[in-house]
Image (cartoon, rainbow, N blue to C red):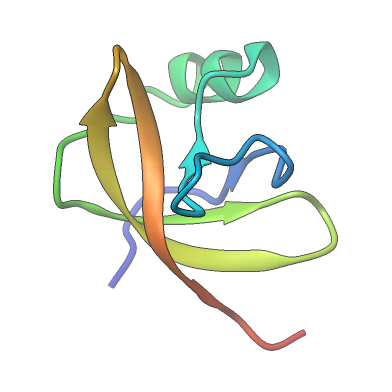
Amino acid sequence: MVASPTIPVDFSARELDGAIRLDSQRTTQFIIDYGIQLSSGASVRVSDGEATALGVLEWRSAAWVAKALKWEPE
């Protein structure tokens, strides 16, 4: 179960394997404002305002990403 709020992301900010980078200014500010603690292996819900997905956090290349996304039905 995801305990934190849904994090706003830009789904076009993808890694080659499809993981979504959580490094945009908007995303970073949201994480700070809500005091969200990120940790590898934690579940996270991300959304661009139109689509929402569940993923698993991973730290890579000096940035957090949400990987193995499972899209939620609208």
